[in-house]
Length: 209
Image (tube, rainbow, N blue to C red):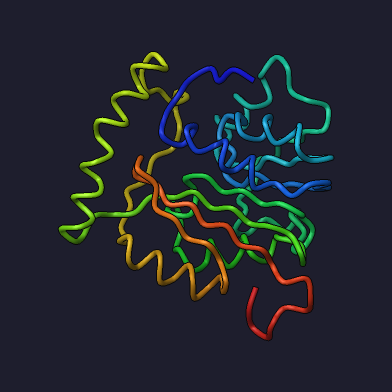
């Protein structure tokens, strides 16, 4: 699938897709925006639900000319909507979503939506706080410029909700490991982190996800 636009979030879609388990049944794309990633997930999972609380974004997603038949778009807040059953999704993705809510609340809810034995992938942003943070971020500037030229510029759907990031890289790394024990946390060159967590197949611990 050729992407209709490129930006730092779209750049990380291949990593999300590579993390989808073989034979995936139900997938959930939380904060799906205009549905670009949701449509890509449709070739990796039997069924995919894309949810977003923005009516404008869901309208864009539904208006796309070639929505796969195994994709459903739902206007909903993944944090609170009871129509999203917990423990029902073999794969859950959340790209540039968790900073729109309290981090612990968002991550815990995403973990609870993930089925036992399923996988959760979070792609997010963080704030620079240390000298090392700024140095690593500076290294991403030429890479971002090169990718932007290659893809005809950096763009996003009109009306895409934006939110400032407040937690630092170190804070997010620490909280991710606390909330998702055993997760893999990686910082990328284009100002994102990627968390991959496999939910234990057994019964969840008391009070946990």
